[in-house]
Length: 148
Image (tube, rainbow, N blue to C red; front, top):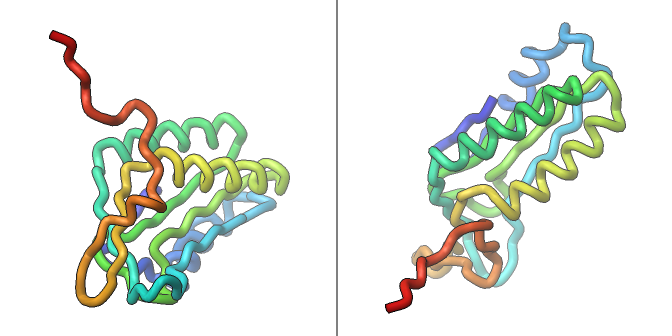
């Protein structure tokens, strides 16, 4: 399940909903990760743009990988503005065994940071400023160079 929210992700409601969906599924482990906006560098929050077709494809590949381990993966992310101390990202793994869930949540969050087509902007002094120094180029992206 991939959910996108305009603004902050509603943490309590989302985690409770996911738990309720899987509480009878006989999983021994439920490992969530919650990303929140830190107060740093004078920002008032962050803003996010998402390219949904690539995000859906990337996420679907992870769902298949999780299924091969007998696990279920869920994710929620924000579009637009998220203020300080609010959540912009939640991921969770449900698995019969804790080791699978612990390892998968770590791999998933790291790959998310490196590969998901989500662009981050600082909200500072009423402006939306691309956070280039904290961004990672997506593998295979960039401009084509044509030799003449």
